[in-house]
Image 1 (cartoon, rainbow, N blue to C red):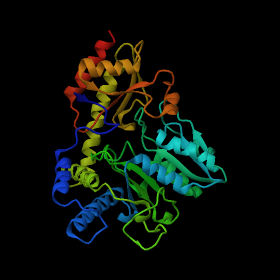
Image 2 (cartoon, rainbow, N blue to C red):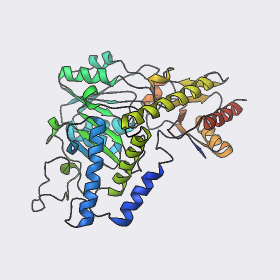
Image 3 (cartoon, rainbow, N blue to C red):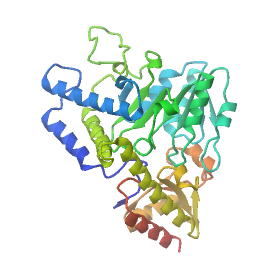
Image 4 (cartoon, rainbow, N blue to C red):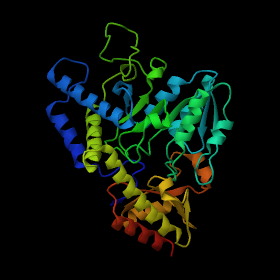
Length: 387
């Protein structure tokens, strides 16, 4: 199977990820932060090291501001529901994933008002439109770093600067960019950032995290309460970060695997995560530009989103005239052994924005392990389907 569904989850994972998880599972996997024996201590140190690595690559001041979650969806829910209160107004965009839109819809019943700023047909958001949506009670702006539907990269630096000038919190969904594009918290001025471990960072499923600015310590309401390994005599949830938001046993195995994914990127860059990211970004951009150009020159094929490869991540959305997108994806899988995703990608308003509300779209998403040969196999298959 040729795999072009990396925007959903990257595949394959580096072998080092599974080896690190196997070593942990077989040799020391205790409950981190819960006991004083050697297995618990070693696991706790391994978990902290991944926390430290994430803080380093994000340019965060303190590793303890990284809260582990089971995925980006939980991180987004924790941030949104933890910060927003009755009477607050939040601004988001029409290119968001349901992991943002559905929590905001649920918060309407709690008295939270939201405005959805419509992006252009290429998926790009104009910061001026966000500025126009600001109200006296606007507490938060939440925006994806890059669209999971068509790959368009958003101007989050400009949006972050706008939010800072207006004294509004800024929340970035980096689900499609962590591990593919450098993300510097100080540069983008994000107060909160959510990301999965299983996409660009090449970790296993069941991993994710929320970055929480130190200015927000104690301001977030936890999604759940329970055992934290600290203040066990008290029935009240502790307020210290990250323990306040990590009740229950962490997915230590998954977190260790996530750390190995980050280390693989570092090795790719000769010991530098950022050189590794540069190499991944360069390859995915080259491969995506090639795929986009070839598809655009085919009869009956419509390609959506921005045209310039430097303005998008490794995602291509397209349709074949007179062929249902779900049927096309099924044919690619069954007849040609190629995995893509079709439909609405958990982002209905994004499809309305780019003009595919009635049809959905086929999504190709490249990863660091895809090859030019695989891209040609994909393009040949699509070409045959247009005949």
